[in-house]
Amino acid sequence: MTAPKDPGHPYAQTSNIVFNFHDQPISTAPFGYEHYISLPPTYNTSPDKSWPMILFLHGAGESQRAKNESYASIRHGVPKIILCYDKYKAGMSTPSIDIPLAPRLRGRNPHKGKSGDADLSSAPVSPEVCRIVAEEFITVTPSLNMGYGWNHSILTALLDHIIQSYRVDINRIHVTGFSMGGYGTWDLALSTPNRFASLMPICGGGDAVRAKNIKHVPQWVHHGERDDIIPISASEKMVKALREAGAADVRFSRYEEDAHDSWTRAYGDVEVWRWVLGQKREGAGGEDDGVVVPEEDIVRVN
Image (spheres, rainbow, N blue to C red):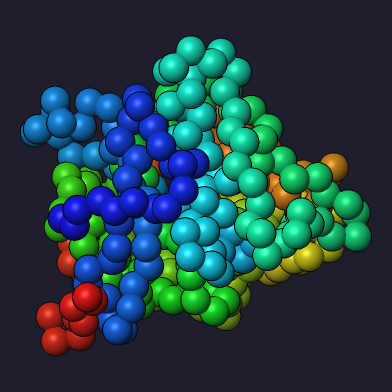
C-alpha cells in the first residue's frame, strides 16, 4: 500500500469518507496511473470483511494535461458520487459538487456535440445512490495523464496492486466507464475475461469480433440515442455480438433524449447500483484469479 499524496488542489478533500490520491507503484511500463481510492466508512472497523470494488474509467475530457489537474478526473461518475456522499453526510440533503473544467478547455464542455449537451457535473446525486456506492464498495479512479485511451496492461497491474493492498472480494470486481472509459471497460475485460463480476460501459464501444470471449460476464450497456460524438451504433454492435454469442445477461438502456452525456442519467439510477451490488463472478478461479501480471513483467515505478 502506498502512502497518499497531495493532489495539489482542494476539490478531493473529504471529511466523512476516505478518498485519497496515490501513485501506482507497480506497472507493466516505466509509468503508471495516479489514482483516487475511496474506502467504505466501516472498512477499518470490519477487519474480517472483504469488499466489492468498482474500477471507474473516465472520458477523454476528464484527463489531466497539466500539473495538479487531476480534479478534472473526478467531476463525473463514481468519484462524483463519493464526493456527493461526503457532502450528504455533512448535511447537504441534495448533494452536488462544484468542480471547474480543466483550464485547457477554456470553459468549453468537452462533451458538447452538435446537439449542445450541457455540462452536468453539478447535477445533484440522490442520497440513496450515494449511500450504496460509498458504503458498499471500494472505488478506484485512475486519472489519465498521458496520450489518449486506457492501457489495459497498466490497468491490470494497478488492479493487482489494489487487490494486494486492500481487502477486496476478488469475485466482486466491477468495471465501468464512459466515452473513452466505455471503450476502456470493454477492452480491459477482453484482456482479462475471467476477472470481473460485471461490466457497465456507457457511450462506448468495443471489439465485436471478440465479444464472445466475455459473453459470460453480466453487462449493462448505456447509450444516448442522440449521441453524435460516439454514435449509439458502437454500443449496438457490441450488444448484438454478445447476444448472438449467447450472452445470458446483457442489458441495454437507450436514452431517447440524451446525447453524449448518458452517464449522468445512468449513474444516477439507484437500480443500476443495486444490480451491480448483486453481481458475483461465476466459476471463481483460473487465469484471472487474484494477481494476474507475471512477476517477470512487473516494473517498479519510482
